[in-house]
Image (cartoon, rainbow, N blue to C red; front, side, top):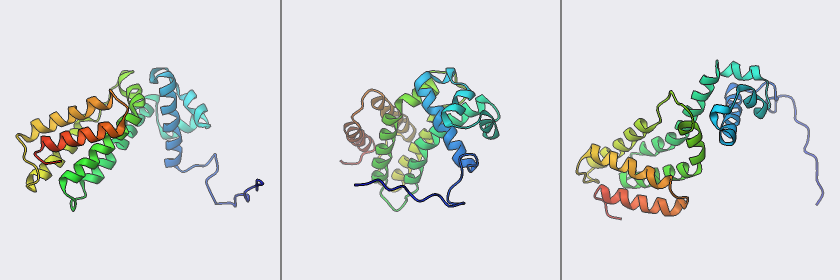
Length: 200
């Protein structure tokens, strides 16, 4: 099988390396910052290193982020959004039983947490942080899901807030002490269902 060179790009086919749309440039910067945080620790990462890793000029970073701290905050916020946006979408699927949505939320959170454990530690725990971790938002998401199941008559809760806090912490622990995603997911789904009075 012979290699055939692809046809040359036509003008306007794609953004050039120098002139990327802002969202593409921000993604490049955040991906580079995340890779460096994993390799060196966030405290030892400079804007110049991020620029070099992203293959862009240092000034290009300051067009998107006014300071190093703003870039660090953006990296943390990006991790939050990637953690919680999909569960929010699942929660909004009101035509599905709450128990099924709960299973899917658990599966996503476990998979995301295991896959990103090292990055999460590097971004939130291995450096001083002026930002809150997304636990308040995660707690609210779980609470809304439990309340929806309660109002629909699917869930039998001893106490909404106590059950929310129990399940939030019950989810977090196993994700950071194991790497068998399928095993952790299945066990947590059963635990969640039993905690809300829903049969397996």
